[in-house]
Image (cartoon, rainbow, N blue to C red; front, side, top):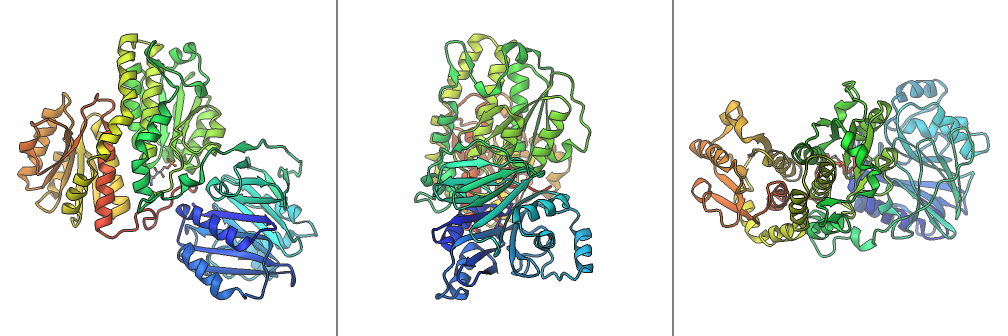
Amino acid sequence: MCGIVGYTGNADVGSILVSGLRRLEYRGYDSAGVALFAPEDAELTVVKTSGKIADLSASMQEELPATKHFSSMGIGHTRWATHGAPTEANAHPHWSQNHEIAVVHNGIIENYAEIKAHLVAKGYTFSSETDSEVIAHLVEQCYQGDLRAAVTTALDRLTGTYGIAVISVKHPGTVVAARKGSPIVVGLHDDETIIASDVSAIVSRTKQVVFLDDGDIVTATGGDVEITTTSSTPVTREATLIDWDTDEIEKGGFDHFMLKEIHEQPAALATGLRGRLDETDGTVRLGGLRLTPQDMARIPRIILAACGTSYYAGMVGKYYFEDFAGIPADIQQAAEFRYRNPIIEPDSCMIAISQSGETADTLAAVREGLMKGATVLGICNVVGSTIAREAGRGVYLHAGPEIGVASTKAFTAQITVMAEMAIMFGRTRRLSAAVGRDMVRELARVPEIAAAVLEREAEIKVIAEKYAQANDAFFIGRGYMFPAALEGALKLKEISYMHAEGYHAAELKHGPIALLDEKVPVIVPVPDLPDKVKTIGNMQECRARKSPVIAIATEGDSDIDAHCDDIIRIPRCHEFVAPIPVVIAEQLFAYYVAKARGCEIDQPRNLAKSVTVE
Ligand code: M6R
């Protein structure tokens, strides 16, 4: 949530900040601002606006005097409001009282009210409702000639989470940044340094990055970078080479990142399978787990923890671990995990699933799991993300950057990875080589299955447009189709703002069926699987209440035709793979409903891509 960019070097700082902020806009987009330094008069200029980066860019054109030369350092921010409305006053950067220091902040300062009261008593005046503004005044109060020392002392007084970047007129060309619970990445490039909350703001200038650890404070001046701890001890952090291409963070001819990412699924899934499937032994090789067959055979229970779409992927994962490996598995809302004092038996395995690897609740669950002695594995997409690093072992999705706020390719990649893990765990137990081989062969078909759904895009668009003006919709399913129904409903509501609910098909008659009538479409994933007959019964119940039924059914399965109003076809596949084509069809359905309703698909209202606050 929120995005930070900081720059020190000789290039045009304004345009570097704006282009970095554009890359970060998916993280938060209700207001934005920059602080720029003009060396000739040793002054900072702050430009802020409510709205998006395009609005900020326009304000910069209008407000920045053409005669003034801004260079050597600057910081910028795109905001997702927590404390205070998304107004210009609440946008970052925030000034110190003397206007010599500017600060941008991601995270939440929990003791800000107490610090604010103290600062007000000392004569400081506040111009925003944010928790973040206290940091600027506090750094000023702590300043005694050394910016890093002032930041270090100020941070010591804060409770909560932060990723910050700070500049001061007294230190031309220097950016100080720090992290605790909110990521900061440092991009290294010759005689310049670009600091950001996310590598996507950096990769167009450099692929050589350092991920700060919690408690790290970085001081960058041009190309000189020094990292210290909160006790001012210098530390060394290894640089990582990012393998993302700039093309991967462009729309590549698609109208939206979401549509591009839906279309990337065959390739993303192929990358996530490459080099991992072992058809000879009917198993999968995942080196990053760092578990021996003996370790895997001993796992008594698996606890999955995640939020949102990743949570629904975890529900599918639970079925895999129980069905293939015979290991009891629970999926937990990450937000509840640490507050419930969960029971973790010796040798238990905890799997944290997070596309971004930065979700605050999932990260807290990881820490709780580690503290209670679980073997914690991360399933993340973003390389070097906090969850991936703190878990210390796990599997990367290799799905490429996901920019659209609605998660798409991450979901299908997550369940593919969990199928791989479940086969691998299963082969240390009751799963035979013969069955393992069948499953591995079916997994190898996943990219082609995904591609076949994309070929149905035009048909799905027509159906989506037919129902686009409904106010409410239900998604129902059973077995593997239950989590797929939940995910379909989430996708639809978050990008189209149509109220949608996901239910187990059998649960409808325990209450929600009261809401059905001819205005409420029901979307029913019903592939040609053994429980199909029961789902057809539930479809009949819906139609008896006059609800239009849209089935997502297997190609060539004519049993469904008489029980629905519209059909979206998916290829024939094994039951465990079926959530992939079903969810891709639901993604396209949601996309075209949202488009027909004129919604801002990549940046839905009130949302942000990465939820780094509780
Ligand atoms: O990065 P994560 O996978 O941890 O994110 C979890 C959720 O915030 C995320 O899946 C969210 O629900 C998406 N907007 C869904 O499309």
